[in-house]
Length: 419
Image (tube, helix red, strand yellow):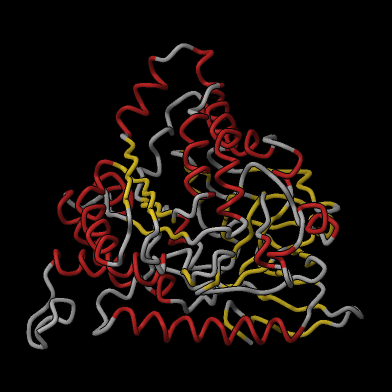
């Protein structure tokens, strides 16, 4: 009996599910190629999953697996004890090394699971400065990821702090068990053959992108409570979703899980107002009830019930941080939405609701985007920024229309579902 299949009358153990998640990360998420190096980033809590991924990576033929660990307690020590001037510094040498690894053909895997409120009580000015410094230092590596020069993916680990944020009334062990159940279900780990299940799911997402690409809409209009937003789409935009071919020729799923189809807005053609439908957890700060107004593609007014100081500093990161780099459609009936859980984690919450992203565009969301220069992408409406931050604007109360080049509108979504 294959250890990934399990006995038909016996439920899988936690360790078996964790092993399956490691396999999905390598085979589905990365599509890791024999001879590739792999660079992993993870928190110390995620060590058990790191080991499962490392094992499957080597079984797939990885030449070398290198993991860079972070420690949330050490992060707090920095904000509480480091000299003020140090918050304008970042480990540029580390990110330069990561960029060099990617240029040499290494794959990239990130394991998320951070405490969504880690920095909630820290000085927002220091948080902003540290984030900005990190974004600038990370850009040489991030540009290769955002441009899909390499195969990459993100998976998650149920850390105690994250679990307690989601299930504050439960004892820690129960909260962690509930979060693991949700992660395994969303990642299709509990199906008889997770890899086959992902293949079928990718085919469904591909069908949705094909329908949207055939329409060639010039804009999308979102309407619902607190929202009336017109998102002009970039010239020669292309919808994507699920499995994609990176520029190195490897098929990967950038997000495990994923339920979205997405494309590139035109950075100058977004107008109207929009309200978030889920909180945004950003670098340890929880930003709730975001409401913004766009004019000519840029945010000109912004408010939030919590985290407004951090949001304003994010918007001031650079010229492109007030403009959109992505718009994505997700049906309200997606499995993650149907779970009824608020994850306080963008990887999950963005796959429960349609969303937009401030900042950097993806070149893959253009026809022949892999062969376009940055100047050519900009001429078609692509945005450039140090950041790429998704936040949710969809729900069961949001309607979406597609607007053609002649200004005619037709239903794309009604009450959060495909029309």
